[in-house]
Image 1 (tube, rainbow, N blue to C red):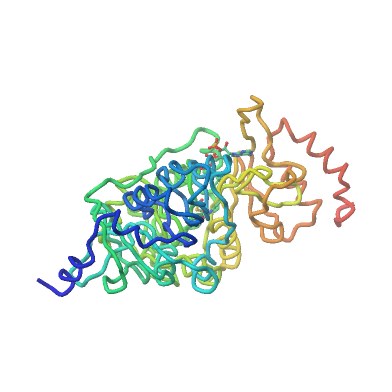
Image 2 (cartoon, rainbow, N blue to C red):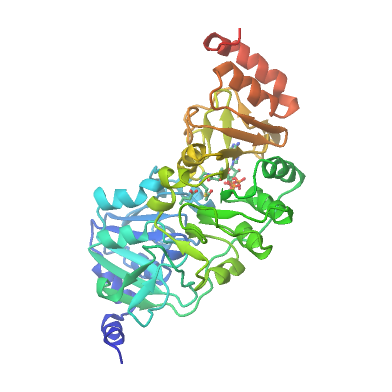
Amino acid sequence: MSQWTDMYKQKLMTPEEAVKVVKSGDWVDYGMGTTQPILLDQALAARRDELQDVKVRMCLSVAPRQIIEQDPERKAFTAMNWHMSGYDRKKCALGQMNFIPMCYRNKPSMYRDLLDVDVALITVGPMDKHGFFNFGLAVSATEAITKKAKKVIVEVNEAMPRVLGGRGECIHISDIDGIVEYGNHPLATIPFTTGDDIDAKIAKTIVQQIPDGATLQLGIGSLPNTIGALLAESDLKDLGVHTEMLVDAFYLMYQHGQLTNRRKAFCRDKVSWAFALGTQDLYDWMDDNPFLAAYPVDVINDPFVISQMDNFISINNCIDIDLFGQVSSESAGTHQISGSGGQLDFTDGAYRSRGGKSIIALRSTFHNKKTGRDESRIIPTLAAGTTVTDPRSQVNWVATEYGIVNLMGASTWERAERLISIAHPDFREDLIKEAEKMKIWRYSNKR
Ligand SMILES: CC(=O)SCCNC(=O)CCNC(=O)[C@H](O)C(C)(C)COP(=O)(O)OP(=O)(O)OC[C@H]1O[C@@H](n2cnc3c(N)ncnc32)[C@H](O)[C@@H]1OP(=O)(O)O
Ligand SMILES: CCCC(=O)O
């Protein structure tokens, strides 16, 4: 028996024993996505009548959180979230969760330099023969969280892929205070679904912008998947990947033999990434695979790192854009939908890359279920309370199903003209009138 196996036995405990470490007033951290704990969450929630003022930070929940479900009035627990999933935004809208704004690249430094963590409760993969537990699908800021925590309790799920990393992908048993076993439970997945004809049109426009030799970043959703699927059919054969979120589209390109990563100045020959969410096939591909290297998000999303890679193409979605070029990708008025995530990091980094392009892609309209009407996503001004994710000074290329335009270096009037040219035709006349009404031309060189 190795010394690590011995230590493992000493630190092994039940979830109920493990969460006894949490005290009233503590800051607890659940990590993100599939590394948020299940058993430890249940056991902590069961202590709702004996605890007060416990703050629990989390990010992108992929399963209901028992500290919320069992304490909706927040008598014992206050949930705080860095980036909303569908579940999170419902809880936030009900007043059962607070939102914490962040620029994703800053998440590790906020933990290092500013935030208290009394107890980290994090899902990991099984211990290896050297005594290390792997962070699996969320390398992200997990090392920073566990390093800051006064106590670290891990919940071992044997289904967690063992990812190989540039750094920050694992924790040693000597840095852990308690171990809880969760057996082998399938991790949350999201299906690989491509979009409709509109997504296909946008994808076609964008794929024409991608040269062979490019390094790619893609965001979440059916549009990035559609772009990935179209790329996989293209004759591009020399692509690289450097992305905060690893998604199935990249696995598809790999299957089609298109990923070489050989032109990347950072992490050459490998896919570099910070967290993953997708299908089980994606997770199987990631497991123990030296073709992929995980890094903390302050490395992956550092605009300087991104800018070192020539022909860097970043493609992200948004909610709305106004005629001045301000992009919101996270809220509709004061209703928080998701978060800034790393969109601004990649918008800045890709613009600075030689030959690079940052592309904000959006369908020209949004079907509003409440009013039953289609609304333009290109709007005169952002609604009051809407969060600007990318300021107009940073926005580069914008694509809809009606084309692609570049706003960088354009005057306010030129921006409005270009954006109206890719708006849905049904809304163009009104947008022109609104632009006139706002006298955007006053500030331009056009008239
Ligand atoms: C995780 C990543 O994206 S990694 C890449 C870098 N990070 C980012 O880009 C972060 C910011 N971006 C994002 O969060 C996402 O890309 C989004 C939200 C812009 C789009 O994501 P998708 O999953 O395609 O969004 P989807 O179309 O499902 O809409 C999400 C919600 O916003 C609502 N919504 C979308 N557009 C609008 C709009 N114009 N007005 C009002 N609500 C809107 C939808 O109704 C939906 O709400 P519901 O699920 O509560 O009904
Ligand atoms: C957790 C942040 C994910 C994103 O960038 O959208």
